Structures are given as structure tokens and as C-alpha cells.
Image 1 (cartoon, one colour):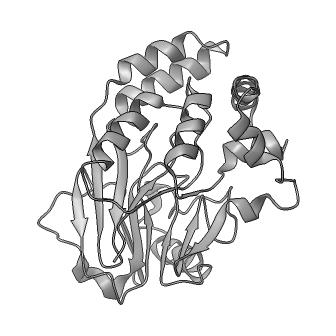
Image 2: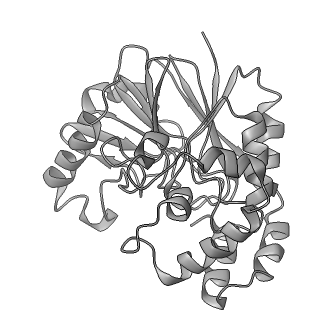
Length: 286
């Protein structure tokens, strides 16, 4: 069976991308699939875009690519918009960027953010909203009080997928979303993120912590986020990606020198606020 390396939310972080690809090379992977947001936030959009075009068997756009080629003025705030304007300028001389985005319009961009491939769904965000909707239970403080409502929300997310297995990004947090009846696939003796993990009467939104392998997926519905390569937000600053082989998913974390990326961010021609938030997130992973 093929082994896929799943990468998402690189966010123009070439140091993290290079570290992940070096790790992928050691792991006997057949194909690399990239789930969007290759650009945005980070200092090396052109380098990341062109590298992904070189190595990816499948690549999707995310909300950051969409906002350059098919902008939604109601969706993007001022700081992010300023960063995307600078990003667009860096990409102007990239032939691979120009060629890829040429057919994308305001009307058809969802087609470039979701792909059914080898019987599985690959999407940047949610199946019913491919670049915008976060697959997330909601604020962790509500997990007990609004358990039934959040459980219903996750059921809706799963029902929008038309395949048994699906893969998404956008939240920057590694995840396995599945039905509660599949609870035995999770090793409770292992390390997992107990703050972010949600358990409802019908669903489990499971967030691993660090490296973890989850098996016995072949006959189960499972919707998986590999985490973020370039800007993790689960409290772990290491670059995140995953390897999938039809029956299992292995979450992997890779150390890289984020101080190099921070230094580049500090020199960007954007507001001090967005630079500080990005620099802090690179160090803290949240």
C-alpha cells in the first residue's frame, strides 16, 4: 500500500520545510501531499512555494493562497492583508506560482482546496468550506458545559466528508477526529494533549502530543490533521507532519532552528504587532 507524507500550513517557513523534507527522505515515502497554506505569515514564500511545486504529488491551496488570487475582504484582517500584499510581491517573479494560480477565480477556488485522490478526501479546511471553516470543537472551556452541542458540531464536520478517510489542515494542530465507538485505537498509556482533546457521546477529537502512531484505521471513519510544518499551535514549536498508509497514521515532530526564521520575520516590512505574534508563535508553538 502507498505511504503518504502529509504536510500542511508551511506558512513560508523554509527552515521548517527543509527539516521536514529531510526527515521524509529517510522514511520510504511514496508520495508527498500538501494541504495548503504554503505561504503567509513567514518570510520565504517564494522559496517554499517553488520547493513544494518541486516535490509534491498533490498540492492544494489554503485560505492564504485564496486571499491573494480570490480575495474575500470580509474574511482577512488588516495585519494579515498587509502580510499577504508583501507575500504577493515576492511571488511575482515565480513562474510556478503564476502558472498554478492562472486558472483560479473567485468562483472556482474551492476546487483547488479540496481533492478526492485514491479514494480519500484531501482538503485545506473543512469538506463543506474548503478554505475557511476550522474543524474544531470550540473553546476548551466549554467542553463540559456544552458537550452535546460540540459533539453535534463534530458530527456535522464528519458527515460532510464523502470518503471513509479524510485529511485537513488549517487549525495548525495535529488531530484524529473519529466516532466514539472507535475509542480503542487510542493508546491511553501514551502521551496525548489532554487540554485540547475533546470526548463527546458520539465523537472523539483526539490531539496527540509529540510523536505518536495510531493503527487499526482500515475499517474506521477517521479525519486527520497532520499539524503545521511552519507554525504549530499545539504548544510544541517543532515542525509537524504525518505519514499515512491506509491502516495507520504516524504523527512526527522535527526539530529545526526557528531562530533563523524569527530573525527573517523581524526584518519584514509589516507591523510590529504581526511580527511579534509570529516570532512568539515560532518559539512557543501556540
